Image 1 (spheres, rainbow, N blue to C red):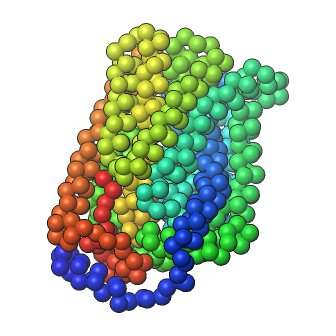
Image 2: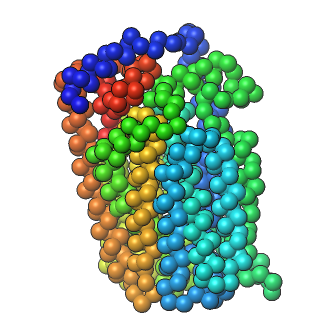
Length: 492
């Protein structure tokens, strides 16, 4: 589509769809926005973080369970454990894009609530696994059901927050996964030390203790998770705050209401930006998948006993939590994503270089901390970057799901590169992860530069942008312009 055609279609928007909400005086509006954001920050963000905490606990507890006797209890041999890890990602991969369409057909609360109950059942049922096939089946279906929260949460947040507010909130949501790493290690330590009995092995208790609460949380989700600004309850917000929430949602490129727009679906797959973000996320997910699953084993092979190894998994995640929050806050303040992604990946590179180059236990542990500090901040940055730069519900949802799908496809590689014969130095595993962190750096910098040049081109051709009205945004979606609108500027 030519630039003249885009500009002409955008201009038509000011004469179409002129419905307006009742105007709120600026002084009252500012106060209402502050109250609304505070309420959402105290309800929506913490609850999504709680959901993702259990999502991450149930996904990653198999690494701790391995140290607590899982392989012996389920009679795993050879590469059975690694294959069981891979089957989770097979299920996770195939269900992400369908989940985004289902969310539009039903509501976020229904989709997330139902899938939480189901993955909680799968996680708990792993305690009853007696063989490789039983464990693989539970992991596969748990992957299918867990795929609703990770890609879905940024979409839900984008309904309530503006573009420059997303990374920090996404970090608060995603930061719970690093808490899960630390918290999971503490739970596993406590179970291994204090809850062993003749009826249930420590690994079985671990699955039950972390799986059962997920089921109850899924039931509560039906009543707690808000679906959209239009459906905010009267007990939660005042009429003025609800109106402000609706206006903010409309000004944040949330004006289309179609459950599935085929043109947006095609536009998402044709968008060159999504090729870059998929490559960056592939570069992230290979080291990230291997890190969460094998950190307890790596620490154990450094010479720590089983229970102590569980406890020693906590500090790397604690370091990561600080970096997730700090880097995401900086990213929102500067409205920059790409250079923050590259900087974080560079920290992870330093960690892998330490792990490869030194056989010293202390140096390896420091390297593991650097890896966590570099990898985890990239997730909220990428989720918010894609949400920021895609206009239209379907295009945004498909772009996030597509990035996650490609990333999780290659996450299966991460589950296969730390083979037991390569212990304790794991040169192959560390080398592969180092190579893909370099991939992250290269493509994030390239995308940032391309988007910066595109913004400069639009400034030169169309002038400095003015805020687009909801009507203009709706027209951009209906006419297939999306983020090619002359008034739209990308987050770089």
